[in-house]
Length: 489
Image (cartoon, rainbow, N blue to C red; front, top):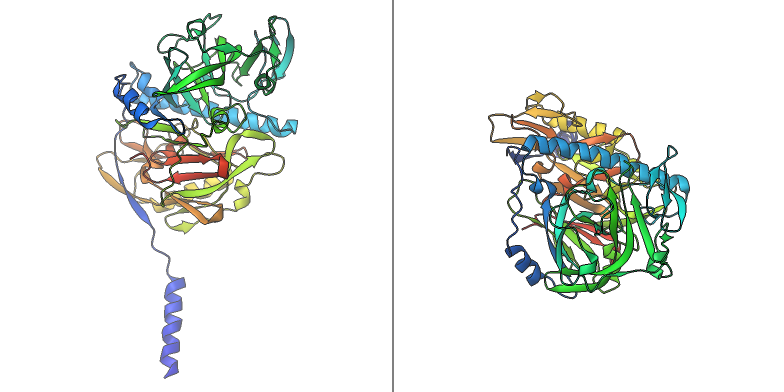
């Protein structure tokens, strides 16, 4: 009697371990590469922001930067996006390497005074109104440091300004008149003399002392400088001003008022620094009981805008939370604990040590709003890419495209099946990616590419293509980062 039962158990055990697990796949609806809708400046946006903002939560509408581009095709815009992406990743990597080499915690960009001149040793010589010194060139992105922007009202009376959001920077700044050098922007340049709430900061002010490197002019007013790795920079007065979100006004927000802004910046008026440093907007707002922020980045071709909210963090039951990790050498970036990746339902043989932040400040994984394509350390990327290729053998291959080495010719098809992808974070949190977040169109001839890339540096970056459609929650008060699936609805 027991013998047949034993054979049944043996057969069941063999079936369970001897046959491969079926590949998990999901359907991808193929949409052609297209331009984002042109920016609509009607008052519905301001009405929505006013309805959703109050003294404990602030709301802004987000747009992709390509919605400001009138004369370029979708393919031209996408190629430019990838060029910007490559420059940003190199710059972020250089910043981390410099911070680790210097061996001390850095708040973000180094700051200085006016008239920088680049030196071959990677430093900037600054000569302000009464003081000169040398500061290292660190971090930054050519052409403006970000892919998404919001319209923020600055000053009293409020002047609407298009500002780029950037989780990889701390200091908020905008162009100001009088301009010694200013780049072209959408709309008028901010005029501080027309604002009754604008005030420069004296050098003795505690806020001025928070700048990593600071200088004073002859009036003993505080000067700031943000220098980017490509030689572009912004220099001006460190000041306080009122920012308005809908009908909610926040006075005395510290920001840079740039009178000398040179290099390859985009048409936005300036930058909203959303990093973890003490001068970032989230840090300043937390002192006013507005804790944390979240954003939802829609696809660049979506007719619906994205959103940026401070305070009132979303926390539905579907939220995937993981620990926010602090880099002891650099406190600007948002690190998290990625420990593994699954493709097609199978956990890949990738050591979690490849994603670990080490005590010297190297390695680790950051979430970044300004990087488009997720970068994985090369040894991990190779495993992920090979697994995706193995699960997509039924799709016809195409030539590589720019930084993408895995592409498919899907012209004439409406839908395809692709392997599933899951990020595994520490604490047991699993994040399943929609197929449209990792197989994307790159031209109008039906070519789609696997939207990951390898990096020879130790820093991995979760980019905004992989974040699209999620509400990404930065809860500094509880030291955690969350992802809300379908959070843009």
